[in-house]
Image 1 (cartoon, rainbow, N blue to C red):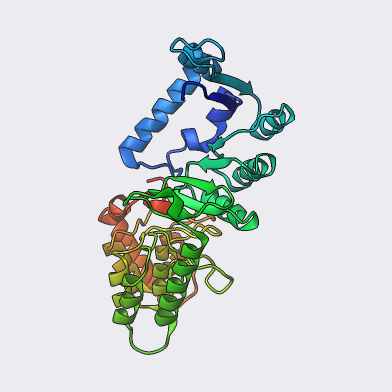
Image 2: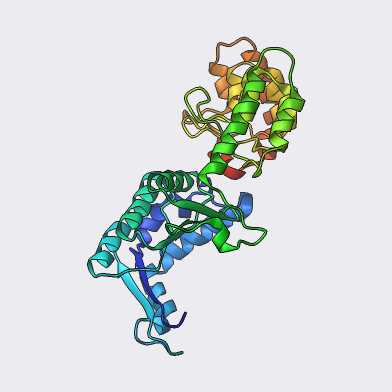
Length: 350
């Protein structure tokens, strides 16, 4: 749009970016794993150490600066070098009434929440667009604020999200076939499926693999690979974790094809393998390793599953230790599916 005016609010701070784990931590939940992820981390660090971000921004966009468009048009880019919240207040004080606000949010919950809420408060008529939907803290903040401010939450291809203006419905957008709408209603549907499968897993008696499978296959839209339960009874655990705790090997083998085997809880950062180890489920530990569970991931106490088994007094914990030691000898830690979905995380040094 040749007449568009773009206000770019940023601090353009090399020091801040170097301190942010999004740019330098190979264990962050950024897309990409293994050597490719490490290479990207090295590249980011080299750029941040050798190139001034603000100077680079000005040089790259110099021909598009306000009032100097070479290709005509009245618009341009106006850099506003300050923190997001201050910048949003500054623009409002000058009477700026944006049509669209794009939020490249901080990937931590509290800053993302504040950025999004300030935008909603200052510019209620604007279409708000953001990225980084693949970060759980950003998803949580966007969902909570959609509910708080009664906004339609619209997600495309699991990456970009937006709040539609008041009065807009999804049918107005005529979305393409590959457009995926992640609404609050969909989240409720996911939770109902989780609750149903969880009750089957925790029920006494023989395993009901077919019952669990029917609920999962009937789910619309498809279930996310990082599906976890809400509420105090489930403690943010995945269905695979419930299988590990309640000794459901057949159900685990089936569900392992649907969900992230290395998913970690947000509270204690534990995996299904940690829980199998702690509860002394040697058979479950063996099955999880066979499915690709990473024996090197650590929980919030910096414990591997082997160490969790060592600290457990549960019957079967010693047998779990033997299973996990054998897995480490045969390369189980390297074979694990690292970094998948929200399941990526710190690993023990080997």
